[in-house]
Image (cartoon, rainbow, N blue to C red):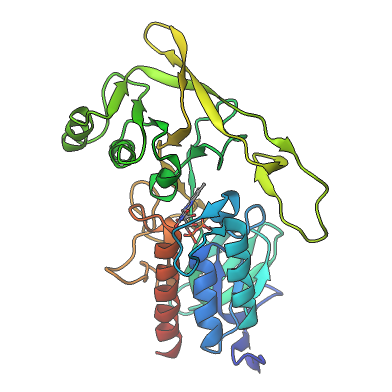
Length: 356
Ligand SMILES: Cc1cc2nc3c(=O)[nH]c(=O)nc-3n(C[C@H](O)[C@H](O)[C@H](O)COP(=O)(O)OP(=O)(O)OC[C@H]3O[C@@H](n4cnc5c(N)ncnc54)[C@H](O)[C@@H]3O)c2cc1C
């Protein structure tokens, strides 16, 4: 086994392995959202040169698909989601982080004799690392109806905490039947002129206390046995030619310079088949999230819904040397700042592991 010192201070070990690309890194981070970039900034400043496997399709994470972020501290005038993530990437790179824009498809966690973990990327490349931080986030479940993608970020939202404030004194619709949907409806009733909670079944999945809360809230109307079948709104203005290196808003696949607005949703009663429309400015979809943890298999402990289980307030997983942070762990807070905070903790836990 030979050791090779990299210029950032991280030791790359050449190990006897059947794999040709067997250099063992000190730290690899999977995911390039707020959790992953923050972990990279901390590990970079500690002298490691972490590799971030950033994802092939959505480098930068969930905030790349949103417009204005008003609640990330340090930006009194708000910041565009893609700009915030670009700044985090540059800050991580400044301290020596390397990026690879690919997806991890599998991880072999080795055994007691070989404490390195082996990642397989979609390209087929193998990467070996002593410490691994999983920061792969989660994805929102979508309704999958016409118009939803087009107005995502311009009236269609998946986060009441993030976007409720934008719909002050405007009609709001929340879709869902679990605790999250009820909590979001209750929270949004502080802002909206009205809140209509639409659920496809005749009974809620939510806990009784949450159902009682929405039923007794005079601003909330319940529409049971009902589904949203389409989202309509004003058309976006066509985009001017982009300036070199310039940034444009992305509206569900089409590039546009002027935000469109949601004006109404089509609905259908699942029991009677009756159809209709509802005027709405903010459509909040609260039908759940899916943590991006399937590629880990069963070796790392997860809960029934696939969220990675960590030890107490730390970020250690059930596998030594593997840490997890952000929305792939956290089903409650789901905010950029809480994911970033957890990324910091994961980096500190990984450093403690690497120096033990
Ligand atoms: C539309 C929208 C608007 C939001 N607005 C706000 C807001 O205003 N304020 C706020 O605080 N929060 C907001 N949030 C929530 C916030 O975006 C998330 O809480 C935060 O991004 C979670 O960060 P994360 O690092 O855990 O994961 P993510 O941001 O989800 O990043 C995960 C990363 O992992 C990568 N990845 C996934 N699987 C793999 C794999 N197998 N291999 C390699 N890479 C992989 C993805 O490509 C991505 O880069 C919003 C969310 C959405 C969806």
